[in-house]
Image 1: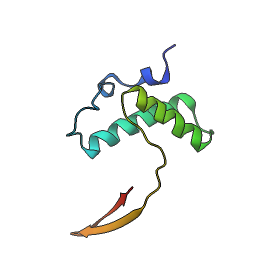
Image 2: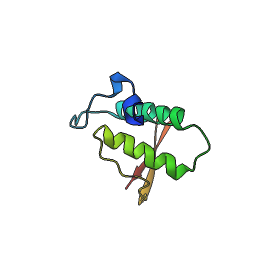
Image 3: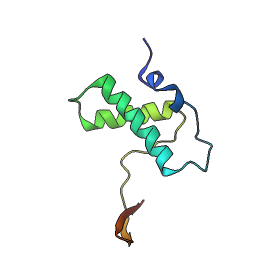
Image 4: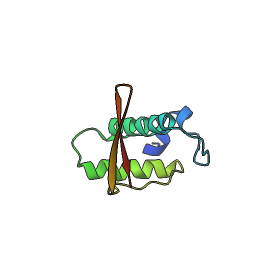
Length: 90
């Protein structure tokens, strides 16, 4: 039986850590895909801390440098042409 980290789709298994031009959409796509596989494999009902720990481990297995639940020191809300963005700074 393959481990949780090995069950990810082949297209998202590529190691892209060194790519400094990786955009937010690509990062979020990889994280959401990994989280989907995690939840599919483990199912519902576990503590949030379990999901956080396993997701971090799965991303580390893919070569990512992961930091969990960092405190936010400041937040700013910006608005342009009717859309709002909330930016958090650690």
